[in-house]
Image 1 (tube, helix red, strand yellow):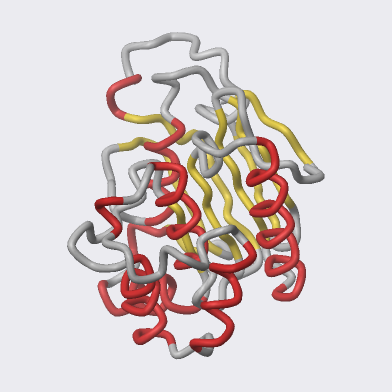
Image 2 (cartoon, rainbow, N blue to C red):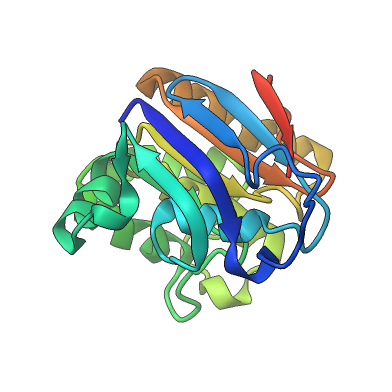
Length: 214
């Protein structure tokens, strides 16, 4: 996948708004592979909705979202399975970890589906982000900031052309933000991938090619 193209996209809940004041909603916007893009927003502006629209888990919007010119509403379940396995990764704002599984198991579940990483690579990532002693801890027992780091490692356990990050460092201190940003930037660069980040004021320490106001 080389491009994600939005044309006149608007969440249905915003349909009665005449002017959203947004650089994304009701606009024509193209995200290209290899670009790092920041979507700045206030709470309630629809940033999580946008990520869900692109990832295909919500359809309550008007307008069109296209992958390489193909409207995503035309994709079948098998198409989505392929897209989410090899082209599109995501860190949801609510993370969606399995609280009853350990931190390592949460990552392992994803990696068993993709076979993309080795156990050593995963354990090294846990060490890099300061969670080397938390691999066997139940995810539900971790702090939200620790869970964010687990979710980021999990999202990197697949090939991707784009990765969607919905407030991925909101509960990290500056040092852990820098560490996770370096890890993310390095892996995205290796794959030549696009990175789409949403933020309401605290974002990964990365160099952004474009910044949009959502």
